[in-house]
Structure formats: C-alpha cells, structure tokens
Image 1: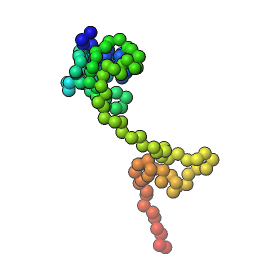
Image 2 (image 1 turned 90 degrees about the vertical axis):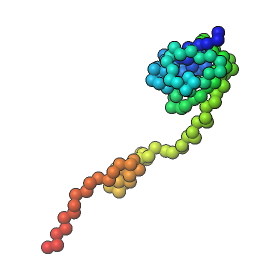
Image 3 (image 1 turned 45 degrees about the vertical axis):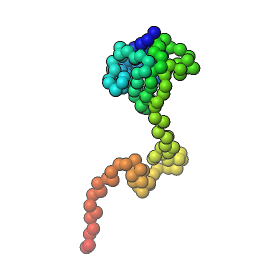
Image 4 (image 1 turned 135 degrees about the vertical axis):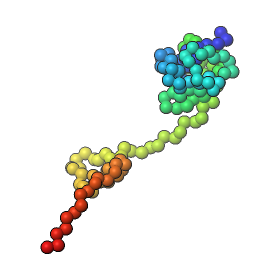
Length: 133
C-alpha cells in the first residue's frame, strides 16, 4: 500500500481513539497535509508532513508508512516520525477561591479577596453619607 486516507492513518497510528473523531478533526480544519487543509479523504504517502491539532496540542508527523488498519502501538510508532514540539510545562497551582471546610462564612474582607483572586471587578459601593450635625 503506497497511500492511505489521512483520517484512517491518524486513527491507525493512535492519534485519535476513533476514526469518526479523526474525521471530525479533518472537518473542523484541525488537520493539514503539507501545509494545506485536509479533508478526511485526502491521501497521504511516505514523506508527507501531517500537522494535527489534537487534544489541545499541536502535533507534527512525517509519514514513513501509510497504513489504514489499526495496529499495536509498537508497530504504529514505526510508521511515522514525531516532529512535534515538546508539550508546554504544566502549571501546578491549586484552585483559587476554595476555603477549608468548617471555617464558617467568609467575612467581607475575605469575600473581597476571593473576588480579587478570581479577577472579578470590585463592587460599586454607594457613597457614604456623613452627617456633620
């Protein structure tokens, strides 16, 4: 076999779990072959470059062997060269605005700090009436 459909090839090398997911990615414009947007039926051959936006990450593959049947992961890895940039480092931060259980209601000061952490604008406060009488 000297060429294969791009959706089947992406499914066969295990970029997508299902072939329909690979087809949907092609329809959404997340797949490019040699720099051009690819439909699901676009054929790939050895030496072609396939750019894919999958699972929130850009992936770049060079086709070594076009396959259309899903094979084991070890065999699938021999069918392409992964030229993808390394994934961005994960930011390890706790969720903002969570309070410990049993600490009671937040005070007004605590509430304002939580809103500031969440990026909410400060509330419009009414003007204070000061009586000098």
